[in-house]
Structure formats: structure tokens, C-alpha cells
Image (cartoon, rainbow, N blue to C red; front, side, top):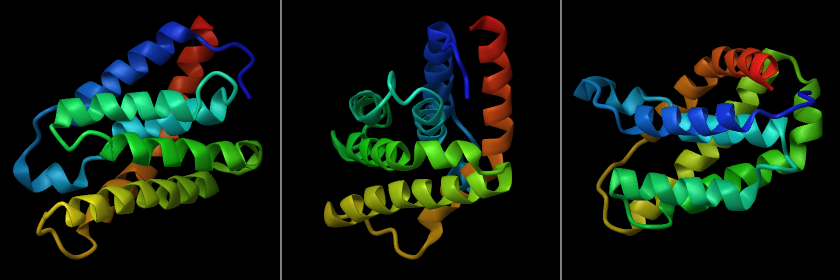
Length: 158
């Protein structure tokens, strides 16, 4: 889809996603916060699968683990799974219209959230119910805006 990848845009998007992932929000809104880093991993894995893949996603997830003070490897594994799943369908995903891409974002980031939830439950968290899927839904809503914005910036600077 994009012929030239702008590495500064990649670095800034990752930095912004990490900042938004730990930025303070009102306590009632915390459960609805989009999965910013997972969206960035999704975007760059779709747009440049040869340059950005499973290992980079795992490294970024490990960085998120450190920033969020979660057990090391939880987000790293979940991000690696998301990147792997995106890599398996990235050619088809490029052809899908935006609403269908949003559904795929919800599905894959829902898997991400479920993995993190199961691991946290195994480690003793007491969060029950399906409220952990709210970030996947809000991420799917944010996806069209993020995708189009990053595409435009990358075209101009790439």
C-alpha cells in the first residue's frame, strides 16, 4: 500500500502510543482506553510487513510491560501474537474496506486483551466479566482515524 516507509514517523508513532498508553485519564475512562501500542503494531505490520514483525512487536510489548509495571512478557507475548496474526492476513487486509478492517482490528485486539486477561487471572487478578474487551472496541473505533492520519503523514514524509 505504501511504497516508502518513513522511519521517523514509525519512531514518533511508537513514542506517542507509549505515552498515550500510560497517560493519566479519569478513573471511569481507564477501562475504555484504546490499546494504542497494539494499534501501532497493527498499522506498521500491515503497511510494512517486511520491516516490522513479530520480534519488533514483542520488543515493544516488553517496553510496555516495563512502563505499565505488569509482569514481564505479558504484553510482549500478546503483541507478538497480534503481529503474527496480522502477518498471516496482511495481504487480504489491505484490500478490505475500512469498516471490515475495523472488525478485524476488534477481533485481533480482542484476542490481545483476552491473552493479557487470562495471564493476569492466572497470576491472581480478581477482574471478572468481559469488561476487558472495551479497549478492543474503542481501538476499532479509533482505527480509521489513526490509519488515515498515519498514511497521510507517511506519504508526505516518506
